[in-house]
Length: 137
Image 1 (cartoon, rainbow, N blue to C red):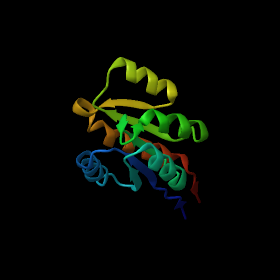
Image 2: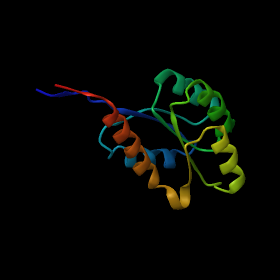
Image 3: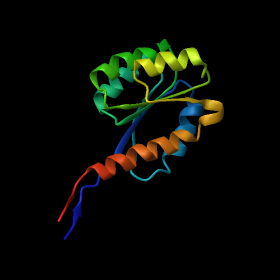
């Protein structure tokens, strides 16, 4: 008899636009095995929420209320390097890409052309996590 360990992949959203946040929630809600564990629109609330919920993946905007995503990435990634950070921004130029990837972002996406890739990436993270858990017999 096989007993598989079922796991959910936890996602935290950091986005100051309510419309974009709702679009992400709708899109990621269709992905089996994904659990949205929280959201924030400022660096302070994001850092607190990420530390409290311990997500597997964070979708991170660059420009936030009262600060920027780089503050979050620098503080959280050093303490939790296993979290997959997906930067999703309207400012996808090379300068930002270099800064964010150097600070630990796994992916750097343009909101205009890459929005749907978030779903594919999160589903891929979930598939890798799901297959990394052993199956008992």
